[in-house]
Length: 548
Image 1: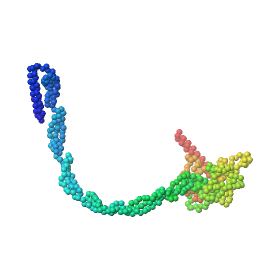
Image 2: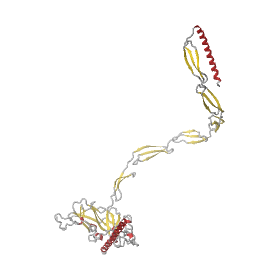
Image 3: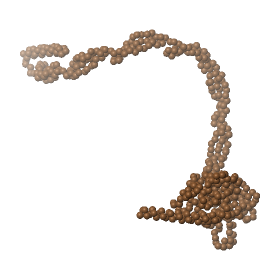
């Protein structure tokens, strides 16, 4: 390989030497005539991979040249590029000189040959079948084993003409799905049916035409919607539920509600039923508006504990109505009702009359709940309550400040001769005896229950006796009935059968024994209270000693 480069190089050097020789000969002839005073220029010729380097001196006058200061050739500086063998070419290393570009190749591996895989393409209705062989290494491929196309296998389907489309026959190939249509026939005409939709409160009316053959439809003849026609229905608030105004459309029954009013709340009449040796006493709180009631303040008479529920049913209850008058000065009205101890109210049957001069009485208008409002009264009125037979049941005096059992003092008697001691009027006196105001008596001539007569003992309910931190509850004191006290029996609004006598009339106080029983019970309570206090002091002293 290197001889290819040396032979041309040797020829070039020979030619150069001949030129120099001829130049020297011409110069000799000239010098024979006249010697040249040489003036040389230098040019350095660098060595290559195969030729020496040198310094060339050339005379600027006669062109004479000479060389000296030779340097050795540098030799080649090859880099190697390896090319891998492929399916059709050998592998080799390519050597390239970085200085002069000289290159040569050296084989390193033979051809690899193809690695074929086959893909069989079957013949279809419109394409020939064949087998494709492709090399998995380089991608070269070729085909053979050709098969002719099979042609279509058609199935026919006939579509009749409709109102919107022509009829035709469809031919579909069962193998590839290709299809085409022929045998067309003209489309039919629509057969419309008319349907009228009347307008409603919220939607327009219109006329719809629908084809009986194909179902095609269109709408014309729109009419405006009617709009709602609301009727008002006012529901008044009750004790526990809201009042509201309901708007209901008479045409479509659409409904919405406005003007909510909060519940009015219960207005209670407090009915006290005294305890007797045979029955439990309690307070019934009766709403005069809705007749809802609940019991509280259960008390017993004597020291035998709570009365157990009778084993045999009591006799049927018969109502015994009494007049109850209850003043509510904060709200400026009083209540007057005939009520039975069982909570039943006698509707109607009373009239409330008022007079400023004691002669001309006018009706003070009792509402459906037995309420008489007096906020707008000017002055003091004498009030009489009479029943349906015209019998007078109660008399008192009424002003915008409330009820008074005594007539007002006359203005011309400054010393108040009717009250020489200067004692406060009954309606303004404190009630040290716990006596119920007289307006709650249905008949002044009837005897008041013991607790309304000012029991000097000021008896406390069982749960308030003694020191509450030391005294045992009734069920821990050996009470034979083992009945839980009212405050531990759940909601007082729902007392058990043992707490509520089935015949509250049986709980009416007996005037013969109530005074003695109250006195005995008073002393028993004093003894129990003293014992509880002593036990409390002893326990407290023991705790203090333990701490010391």
